Length: 368
Image 1 (cartoon, helix red, strand yellow):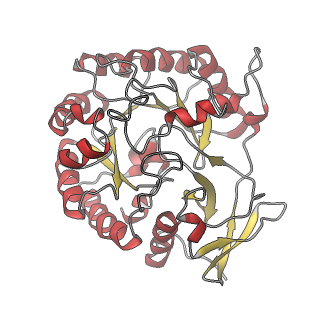
Image 2 (cartoon, rainbow, N blue to C red):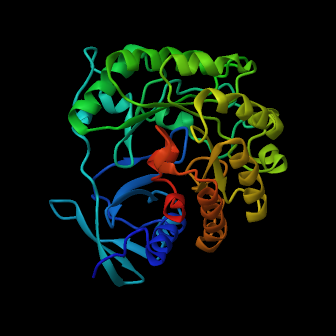
């Protein structure tokens, strides 16, 4: 059997269902995976109908998913089943070649940056955050400290290390863009300074489009230095659509209110360009579909691309048992949001770098 392409109604439904339910896999599946960290995690990369997407596999929900994957063959090919019925063939991409290299001081490249989706390199420059250690201020879904505690990364990636790994990833594996995110190191520039330093070093070493991600700096003058340092796009992530949900789920980050984010977006768009400023919205944290779509309408009017993804509960966090959004809920958001983006002529393919361009953590692009 052949799995339908993501551009079809049945293809969109299949990927939306997979990202909501997750996928049961065997212990020795191999391929590219991510556990813990600062963003959506506990995923594995799969290629389905020619498109590369991230699907939850290490969550409690995935263990009870109706979707199963057979052990892959030597080429990474696997049979995808739903309730025991064969749907077709998927692939688990092999680990990239740059993962086999190490820095001169012996740090594996994969501890410095990871491949996301098909061809996006990503790193958390500062693997620490002023909000994380205290659950009264931390984002309840975040696992930024887990990968550090498990020795899967290092606390701080220097500009030289990032430039070295980025250059190798481009030359060996054809990486096409890179995401630089960070835990929040302070309440003033909120990471913009270290991101600018990192971006400058990477762009001096390799011609690679970059997205930088941080909370809105207290002073919006930081947007121009980030752009001048070589950042092509900017991510400032609201995570939730309403202030009430933000205060419940991310009490520290919510002190930077939705209104302050909107002011920051209005300042950043003229510098980075329409559609080159993005925000992550995690559907399933408590906002209604109407809440998310109302915010998306405001964002699109400002020229901001709202990248809506299904919330994935990460093991070891306070929300590990929080149910992910249903596939029906995701479709009730993504279908009208796709129409809104089409009407505004704002497409993920026009984003120069970042999560929206990669698109692997959401089926949103299939609805555009």
